[in-house]
Every structure is written in C-alpha cells, then in structure tokens.
Length: 600
Image (cartoon, rainbow, N blue to C red; front, side):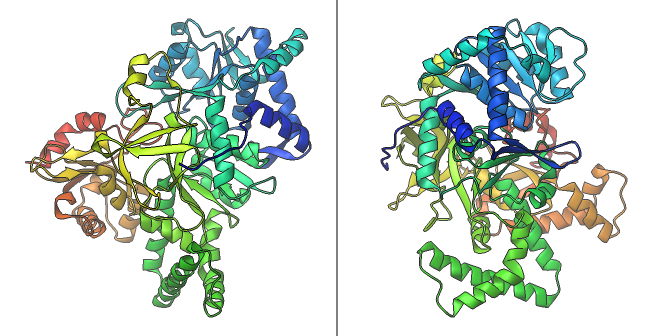
C-alpha cells in the first residue's frame, strides 16, 4: 500500500471553487440538435445548478433524500447531479437502457422522491410505473418533451422557476452543514445474478479517489478536453467526470454512443474513458484492413509496428530513444501511427480503460502507436479504481499497480480482497449482503481471483462465480476464452459453455454489418440473417477464424463446437447487464435447446 497524505476536500466545495476561479471558461460542452458543439461556462454551470438546488429545496427535499437521474449522457445530467449534492441529497443514477421492472425496483427500494429523465422513452417508462411508486412526487424532463398533461411531470425550465426566495437561505444552510460522511450517491449494481444492490458511497470515498488519481495519473487541466460517451450511470464514467471537473477540464457529452466515430473527429479529445470492447473493435478493423492491403503497404505497417515496439521498450524504462531509432520512429509515426491516432481524433494524451480484461497484445499495440491506454481494475463497491497501469514500466498482462491508500491481499480461492478509502459503506437496506461481502478483518470480497507479483502488479485470473469445471475435472475461465475470440471483427458477442460438460462450446453472435459485407463480396445469396448464418461457407469461415484465434489456448480450453445466433444478446431481455456483462444463467436457460444440440 502506498501512502497519501493530501487533505481530503468535499466535492461540492471543489466544484464551487472551480466555478468561481474559472468563471468564463468552458466547463461543459455538448452537441445541439443540429449536431453543432455548444459550450456552457463555469459561471452558467454554477448558476443553473444553484437554481435547480433551490427548486428542489422549495419542493421540500430533505437531507439525504434520494433523487434519481434516468437519462443518457447530457450536460443536464451533471448539472442535476451537482444541484442534488449541494442540498445534501443523494443522487441515484438509473441506466437509460433499464426497463420498467428494473426502474420501478430502484425507485421503490431507494425511496426516491424525484426523478430526472432525459428523453421521451425514459419519461414514458417513468410515467407508466409512477402509480406503483408511492414515494415518487415529481418527474422532471431535462429536455423539451411531451409531458402527457400529467401533474407529476414538469419541464426543466418550469421546475427551476418554482424556486422560492426562502430557498436562498436554505441553500446557504445546507452548504454550511454538509459532511464528508454524507452519502453522495447510491448506485444499484446491475448484477449478473439476483436483484440489484444499492451501493452506498460517501464524500470520503469520492475524495479519496480524486486525490489518488491526481497523484497517480499525468497532470490534466483546462487545456484538456474529455469526451464522455460511457454511461454516467456507471461508476467508471461518473467518477472520471468528477475527476476531470475537479481539475478544470472541459467535459464533452455524447448522448448516443453509436455516434462515437464521428464525435471523435469533431471533438478531438485529449482524454476519454473506454471499455476493452472499444479497443478490440479498432484493433480488429486495423488488422483486417492491413491483411487486405497491397504487399508494400503491409510491409510498411509491420515494420512501423516493429519500430514502435522497440521505442516502447525505451519509453517503459524512461530512457531517450537512441540516435538511430529516433528518425525511424519519426518516419513510422508520419506514415502509420499519426494516421491511426486520427481514428481517435488525433490529440489523445490518456485513455483510461476498465470494465473488463484487455488482451495484453491489444494494450501493447495502442502503446506502440502512441496511444496511452491506462488499463485499470475496480468496481462500484470501490468507487471505481483499485489499480491501474503506471505511465512507465507497466506489465501488459496485469491490471496495474495498486492505487495509493488502498491495500490488496489475496484470500481463499485466490480471491482479491480490498481495503481502503474508496471502499463502500455497504449495501442500502441490505445488512445481510453487506456482511457477506466483507471479511472479518474488514476487507471487501471482490469475487475476482488473482495474485500480486513481487513488483506490486495486480493480476486478475478469473471471476470466481464464472469459473467453469468440465465433466473431466478441468477448470475453464470463460472470460479468457471469450477475450481471445472478441479480437475478431466478425465476432460481436460470445458466451462460452463448459460447466459440467465434456468439452467447451460457444454461442457466437456475429457482427452482422461486417458479415453482410463479407457475404456480398463472396456473392452469397440469403433471405435473412438466420439464412445467412446457416450458409455452409459462412459456418466454415467462422470455424477457421475461431481455430486460428484460439490456437494459443490449451487443448481442454478450446471451443470444440459453436452455434451462430441471428440476433445479439440484449439488455431488454435480461441476457446482458447495462454494462454489457453476460447474464450466463439467463443465457443458459434461454438457449437450452441450442446448447444441448452441441453435445449430442
């Protein structure tokens, strides 16, 4: 455990100080309806959050009352969040992809009084469940919507206008009485099994993460631009946005993650969080294009990559490039690396990566081309980051060095156990589950197996609950197998099956955009997607690609049979969580007949 000695500040104080200091500078940026970028200054950000705080106080919101935000990313998300925190209430984020059942559970379990919504779909979901949510008083539309002429619904502007004169003094009092022990958020983990659990995080948890990130990561400031495209309802993006705003960085909001490619070229961010799947897709596309390129271009690419790998070895040791390597690297950068960097907007300084394991060769590839990926490990229960790759000398197989002020030890079944300033207070109204997830000496049980090496690098080997044992007694870590196959641009999703089976099989969802292009080139005729995946040439092509991708795996880990699926695993059907993790139990039940066919 590294030490940290910096005084912990209340997040609300930090934001209010930044608003005063950076007044006319840009705090938030977003795309308007014409897809043009618009700015919100720190002064305007402060004024809007202040007005919203006063309207909430006028409504009668009490200390530590729960207020929900059910929306895609937008500046109003953060404005509402700060407004809630300023009055000592608690923000409860809800994924924009959640259905009625999930949303109703969170509203009722948290005893939510007010819900902010982003678009018409979210408003209508909220309206449909409102009669079954006795504590819910108001639904506030953050964008212009059809409010369906119901008393409970109100627009953002109309709600702000309800602020009373008395609320000014009330706000001053709430700010004066705030405490580091107040909860700042209640985040319901989507959970791959069972009902969601409300993770209680307080201002000490958040302050700990802000301080340790400042100590561990490269310096960032008002000259930086961060693009926010992962959902703010997830702790990864939420904690990151808190950090960038605490450092005066401009935060840009993207409400539709499918528009990320276009947004990168317009926004040109210097910072951005992403999940491994984002990098896997870029990696697969790059190498596929190279394979199709003429011989000379292939040679230029592979030679540039060799130079990049060599240069990375020097950078890892913080050594200058030797005189003979410098011009070679500049040549490789001009011909290859700078063009690849343009895919990400061309200005990236740092890209935190988390949410799942990243294949080492993919991480190294991005570092070789000059993209500083910071792979990290964390969970909602630890206010995100427990470990992350250092700027220099990182071990690409690891999930990074342990953050300052955090202690990690390895428990039974090689479980990673965590203690430190970021660890949650417990699960809301759930003392039984809280007791279950802590050891007697106060360490959080992560449910992940791993180890720490002599240099202090943390490694994750598998998710203990997901570990599968074949009928022949061999253990399979499904994520390791799935990670190998997801490097292929033709594979969108994959679920490995092996538990109590004599061999490994898999359900594979193709990336249909790419597959349909491939079919067109080969002049394969088909009526629909089901017809396409049953085509013998397509099945044979997948078989070859899967065998190639898994050649480094041990014999018992290799997929012997697979079935292609005509549609993706979906959040709506409960097959994946809002953070895109597989709900294996649901998948096993839903595709039982198809799975059994692979073992006949």
